[in-house]
Image (cartoon, rainbow, N blue to C red):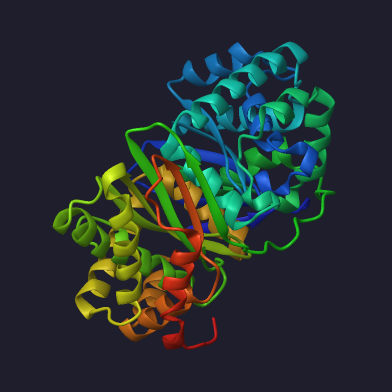
Length: 431
């Protein structure tokens, strides 16, 4: 078992991993272009393009695309993130050529029919409305908007009703022409697949795809931080307390992932035990760390009732301070075990594995083995984690986001002042 990588003459990267115990294959195309690649007037176009991919080509109608893949028992989907867009399918191994043909057809000959576009714009407007009506979703949009104010990396992936309604078929084609080039695309298959045969099939259909994307890469992001609050008449308040995180490539990225697990990665985590189990201040609390190519965010999300909000935030701050004072070896070992288990379990899903390989190739230019990842984790010490905690939670302006009955929420200035009170203990080390 291992990843095999080839490159076509136009620069397209092709990677496979044969998982011999499977009868199915997940294959897809991952493009290094997501919502942060949009111009200001294009907010939401990457997500709309993903939706329109299945709405007809020169050879297939929208119904035919669905029928062709489902007639053989397969499934097809797509996804847009901040930095990537993916189009992928899972099929039985004998139907691999059909799946490649459908994905290539979508990427090279989508019609962007005006009637289909109008229908899909209406669908996305409903999606935007549904997100706004879901506080535990929209609070994350407001969080990134506040952390990276006035930057494309902080904008919601869905766009706004005004921008989504404004897009034309020509704008979709122009965006695709600028952003999609073989130099920014990875074709991956994981499961029951023969590498050489897969390369031949992909080359037939995508070997003449344009070599280079014309659009420049987006500018470097700058974490800003700040405060966003929206009073709503809801049963519970959604709260995020966040900080500048670490990019994929920096030394502290994996340490930040481990720290998030120790603080709020499960029922045994510090926040769950202290905030929920011992004090009963909320029904949901966890920590997260999101890395991007040039920055990241570290945050704690909690959902709580009106009567507990005043006590909840100081308790979270207290736990962040404690992480800068002491983390024990048992916590680190447990976090490592959780990371390793999640990694190995991903090998049991060809879809998870294909996405993992694609992301590694897009970010690092090569696949990264489990052994290498575990070596990186083994170099993390408790001393390094406490040092990282002090720097993460005291070195930058926090980002505070709250939606719901938040009248008793502590003032932003008080939260920032309380966090900075521990700054004297922070030590600067290379990241």
